Length: 529
Image (tube, rainbow, N blue to C red):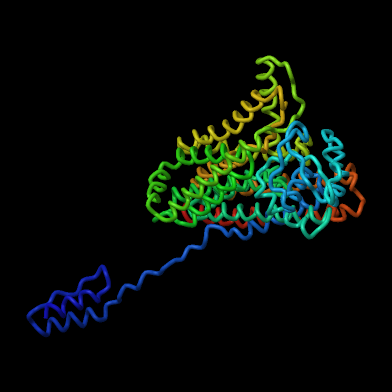
């Protein structure tokens, strides 16, 4: 009898007990009858939460904006794009290592390039105020042309990938194909970053990150150059480390893989990459103390062992390349010999405001300013987001935000002081973005406290600023180049679109980037209010 009672007890819904057994059979039967007709509690409904946001819409929107940049820029008009195109062509055709020399502006190397690439790049190359015949014409070397490239000392891996189209296409066509491949790499890392963010962060963090992708970032992603991919790799490393620190359960091998790929790219793409990777790791360890035990838990796992070996080998190979190729030697730009220490300080300090503006917009070259409305829109938006984070953020967030923004200005300040007499003020504001992009992640975290109403207000204010800033940036460049480019009206730049088409392309892209994500963020705020 006891066994039967226990079995019946186990079958009853949780939270309810069966009536006590009595000796009287009729009473027992009557109570049992009453029990049988009592309503039973239903099984709990399993509510499957929708994903915080879908990365596909963000990536598609970014693609549309980037296509706008690609067709708005004449071939080879991007900042130093001819240097990178020459390096890509040379590497794709087998010249992975070019002997370092003072080929151009006191740096670079002479590379062997296909003649069609040199001929196609010549009009825009000769337009630069700092180029000479060695930069744009070169000398015949068999069936190729030996020509100077300011990117001749850069690590060849990126150029081996983006330079592949030069094996099958000629001239301008190969340039557009190289831009497309470089963009594909950037969008891939952007998707990696967004997928890592959605695993742990409130959608408002992703909204903040998209606000932090200023026009100069999206411009950099459209060029045949490693800068855009370096920026997206920095963002992916920030997001992956945040995912490792904050995700529930055991550390995901996918997050570890994302962090390893992002860090490996940072270590490889440019000479300052190891510094940015080290700063990102150090700052992330401070912001998320749980990252230490989470990473330590990987010490005896296969994923942890492979990650450690991979990063060690990549870092060692990168340092060997940097030291062996003297790739830290930057190009000269208005060198100032025989200057005093006070001159170094004053000149370097005077460049800080320019770097701040260049972090928002400077294209096609670093000395080309965007319309004032672009700076006003993004400085107002980012200033508010940073101020809100300092006001409402946790202490660690505040300190880390000051460190990231401060270091992004202190590093170029110190570099400029040390190299002013040889290389002048060669620094560009966008160079620090692989580390600086983490500020967007940090000032996005305090936005999670906003309820649905607060989020709606923020989105309503931010959306037009983002759309106007990106649209005006691209259209201004197109209109300027239609007036000034030597390729304007020629078959070499037959992709130049009508202004109305460009406006529609960029505006729709910005809307796809921002609105679905903002909708998810507002819905999350209403659900948690």
